[in-house]
Amino acid sequence: MPTTPACIFCRILTGEAEASLVYEDENLAAFLDIFPMVHGHSLVVPRRHLAGLADLDSDLGGKMIDAGRKLATAMRPALGCQGVNLFLADGTAAGQTVFHVHLHVLPRSGGDGFGLRRGLHSPPARHELEEQARRLRKALGSPS
Ligand SMILES: [Zn+2]
Image 1 (cartoon, rainbow, N blue to C red):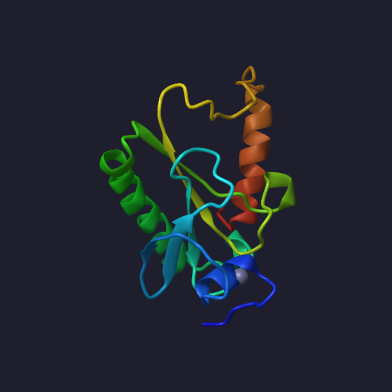
Image 2: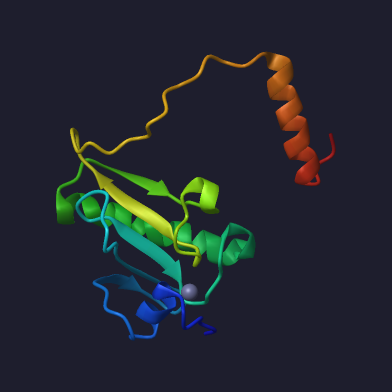
């Protein structure tokens, strides 16, 4: 599998850097985040160095989500959590700091202090939503 020596996740995957592994198969590995946001915070990464979401094909993306689902199911009995968040930061503006695509699997319990900082906004005008939806459909190649 192609790896990039400067990438910390590639170094973990080749055994050059230390990590606490929680899952692996031929395409993916998952290990505990060295800077956990919550107890048990895990990362699912493809074995191949791919920087972001646009580099994933549907098959590998689906496998990442499925690995996250398996981990989430295992976290409840193993860690005693009450819920799980899946989170993927794609790009600097979204908070991605390691440019080897990874899915955060965050076990959650009431009062753990984790959460999205921004509250809900009031709903935009329908025409604004329709314009955003039209732009997205166009970018997706869907007929408008
Ligand atoms: Zn990498």
